[in-house]
Image (cartoon, rainbow, N blue to C red; front, side, top):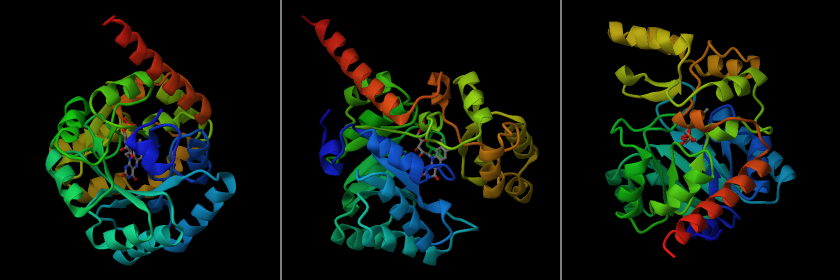
Length: 323
Ligand SMILES: Cc1cc2nc3c(=O)[nH]c(=O)nc-3n(C[C@H](O)[C@H](O)[C@H](O)COP(=O)(O)O)c2cc1C
């Protein structure tokens, strides 16, 4: 499969793993890249630029294929502005293939990133943000609809509408994110004007994603209606799996804003521990509506090969309808 995205990044399949705090580490990153997609290391997993550098070095021991780094520029109690500077500097020194930025635009880093030959993409939820990052000189845009796990923009526009709106508005390549988990999603994304897909939720149920088995079982059990938008009252909505903890957060929000009570329930350490101990009711797990499309656990290679094969079959079958 060839698109501007595969050409730009030097990858076989236009399938990109989106950043996942606590999950996108060297093993999963290398597995996605070895399978022909673009793997991801999420910088926020590491307390310092040097920690991130060690993860990049480790990933290079596991793959000689291109991979990217997610840098989430959102207000953080844990990550200082100086650490963000270090993340970008290390990505440039190590010449990773790509940086995925989310949150604020990486305006002050762009010259350094381009000079290093690193490709830079921004994840957006609105046409106006896509136009802005194109003007700033980004190499491409990730269009993330409301279905996505993580922090969809509170414009609340779905992938189905956002992708073609952004594709018709910018000249740089568009990758669609949010609600994609199989070959049908790849075929649909191409039809909507995207040149690739980004997934995160689907990658949790791969053998190379090191989470507790309870998480895998729960993801297989849950359906598309089993996520909720939490933390709207904090102006930072997140799509998370419905469970005892997200119910509690939503009821605190319904009572009126009590940010400190909510902050205590959504600490990074709580989520980090729960991915490992498998307490499926005890943390706000970022999970997208694509959870309804996940019925098994596969290796990254099986997943990506199957998705591309299915997408091709779908596109050919539909072409036949016109003959
Ligand atoms: C567990 C999890 C953690 C995530 N963490 C981040 C993050 O740290 N930074 C970020 O920009 N996006 C994050 N996201 C969003 C993904 O990168 C991606 O945009 C989104 O999940 C794609 O939609 P999908 O969930 O339908 O695959 C996360 C998503 C999940 C599922």
